[in-house]
Amino acid sequence: MKFLFVCFSFILASLSVYSSAEQDSVLKMLKNELSKKDRYDEIKHVRIKRLKHSLNQRPLDQLKIYASLFDEYEYYKFDSAFVYGNKLLSLSLRQNDPVKINQSKVKLASLLLHAGLFKETFDYLKDIDISLLDAKTKYDFFCLKSGAYSNLAIYNSDGYFSKNYNEKAINYLDSALSLCKPKSFEWKFTKGNKQVVSGQTDVPPTYFLDILNHEKISAHDSARVLTAMAAFYLKKEDHDKRIQVLAKSAICDIRSSTKETLATLLLAEDLFYSGDLPNAYLFIQCSRDDAGFYGNRLRKLKIESILPEIATQVNLATARQKDRFFNYFFYISLISIIISLVLFMIFIQMRKLKTKEKIIEDKNEELNLVNHQLLAINEKLQEYATVKERYIGYFFDSISGYIVKLDKQKKSVERKIMTGRYNEALSSLNEINIKKERQLLFNTFDEVFISIFPNFINVLNSMLSPQDQIWPKQPELLNTELRIFALIRLGITDTQAIATILEYSVNTIYIYKMRIKAKALVSAEVFDRTVMNVKAI
Image (cartoon, rainbow, N blue to C red):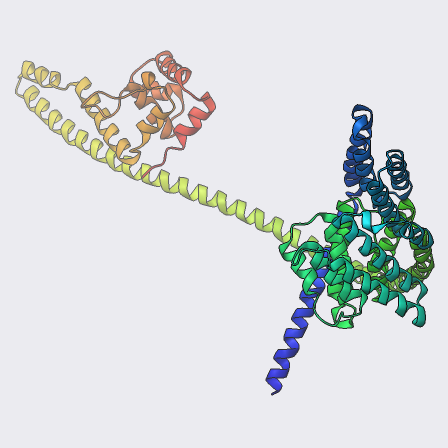
C-alpha cells in the first residue's frame, strides 16, 4: 500500500512538472509572438490599403468593398469600422435596399457590442426587421442578441437581473441553433457557447475540442473558440490548462491582428492571482494597449481598475526583491571578503611554494641537461671506443704483417749480399710494390670504416641531388671523395693530414671538399654537421 502511495505521488509530481513546463513553453511562444505584433499589423494594413485603392477603380462594387473594409476593421479599430459601417448603411439607404439596410444594422450593432456600448447596441437591434434577413445574417442576429444579453448580465453582476438576461441569452442561442446545419462549425460553436452561458462548465468542452481537432478555421475563429473554452477550466486543478488555453487564444489574436480581445485580460488576471506578477503585468499592459487602440471604453475601465493593483503588487515585489538583493549583497560581500583574505593567504603560501617549485624545476632542468650531455658524451665515447678498437686492431694486424714481411725481406737480402749475389738482392728489393701496398691499405681501411658506419654513403648522398651523388665503382667500397669525408668523420679534419694520408696535395683535397659541398642541397654547416652525426654501429 505504501508503495502504491509513493508511485501515485511520483506520477502526480511528474504530471505537475510536465504541465508547468508546457505552460512556460506556451507563454514563451506568446511573448515571441508579441515581438512580431507590428509585422502582423503591417499585413493587415496592406490589405486595407489595397481595398481603399479599389474604391476608386471599382465604383460599382462600393457596397461590397465597404463591407470588406468593415470586416477588416471590425475587431481591429472601432472608429474606422464604424465609419465604414455607416457608409455601408448610407449606401444601402440610397439604394433603397431593405435587405442590405438590415444587414448593415446587424454589422453596426455587432460593432457597438464589441466597444461595450450596450444601449446603442440594443437601439440598432430594435430597428432590425429579421424577416428581411437571410439565414446566415439571421443566425448572426440571434448570436448577437444572445451576446448582448450575456454581456449585460456580466456587466450588471446582479442576481435578479442577470438571471433574466442569461435566460434571454440562452433563448436566442436556441433560435440561432435552429438555423444551423447539424455538426457544422456554427452548430458546434453555438452549442459550446450555450454550455458557457447556462453555466454547464463542469463537463468537458466537447464541442469546442471537436472544432479545434476537426475543423479548419481562421486564427480569429480559433481565438474565439479558445477564449470561450477557458470558461471550462475555472477549477483550481485546471489552472495550468486555463493558462495554456488563454495564451493560445492570445497568440491567435496577435496573428489575426485582433485588438478587441479578451484573452490577454483574462490571462493577466489569472497569472496575477496565481502569483506570476511579471507576466501578469506584461499582459495587462498589452491588453490595455489593445483596448486603447481599438476604442473599447468598457474594457479600458475594467483594465484600469485592475492595473493599479497589479502595478502595486509588482512594485512591492520589486521592493522585496531589492531588500533581498541588499541582504544577499551584504552577506555575499562579507563572504567575499573572508574568501579574499583566505585566498590572499593561500596566494602567499602558493607563491612561496611556487618559488621553491621553480628552484626545484630549474635544478631538475639543469640535471636533465647534464644527463643529456653525459648521455651524448657517453654515446660519443662509446663510438670513439668502437672506432679506436676496430682501427687499433686493424693497424696492429697491418703493422705486424709488415714487420714480418720486412724481416723476411731483410734476411733474404742479407744472405744474397753475403754470398755476393748483388743482382739478386737488388731484384728482391724491386719486388716491393709500394703502390700495391698502399691500395691494399686503403681497401682494408674502407672495409673497417664501412663495417663501423654502414649508412655513411647513403647519408652523404641524401644531401646531394641524384645527378651529383657519389657511388664507388665495384669492387671499391669507397672512392677518393668518400674517403676524404670518411677521414673527417673519424675526426681527422686537418686538410694537410688528409692530403698526407691519401698522398694528394693540400689544394687537391680542398677542391674535392668544396666541389661536393657546392653541389649539396643544404648549407656547408649543415653538411658538415650531418657527416659528423652519422651513427656508428
